[in-house]
Image 1 (cartoon, rainbow, N blue to C red):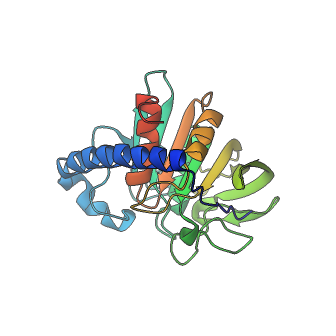
Image 2 (cartoon, helix red, strand yellow):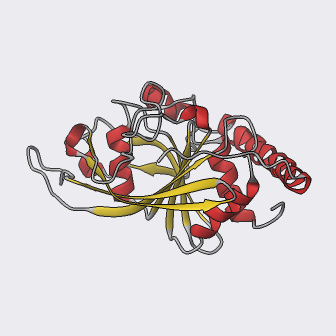
Length: 258
């Protein structure tokens, strides 16, 4: 399920890519300014749960259900922010889960907000060649199984299973859609577990490396079109800021450049 992309040297596409990159830089600069003005005291105790310092804005942060605190986690913090688009769709921006630190909490958040889709934006250098995991274990941790019927187990009774895969191809580019299922969430009572399942779709776009524009903005548009009727979307890149913020910003502001 490794997704590979081929560069398109078409001049028109190159111009579109440059325009998208200019837009991305504008959005990212705005995000950085907001980050620097955030409430530093809030995030300082949780730096072990942050890939980069102070990227979780206080007012729009996602708060883990208090019933899970003490029974499951030591705190309600997760580096994630939620926003409502003009059309009522909810977008959540977060960092790629940190192994043994935030991977289980990431999945609890997915269930808590009832996410319908997860979008992972990355470059090919960030993706593992293994069949079993989506991203390099030594860099980001294998948080989602790539093979059908493969299950990954995390701490606190969280299990994630890939129950279906389908592929979409366009001009040599593959955008994959996975459907996952996980179960066994504590109900807040000590030594008891409440089992239930939650289904979602997992989208991986491999063609957007850190600090660069995407290889082909047409593929970004196609992914966005797949999400147009999805009500709750979680978007993440490595740090949950640059690429994730640009993707969500494009959805918010419409087709200004694309």
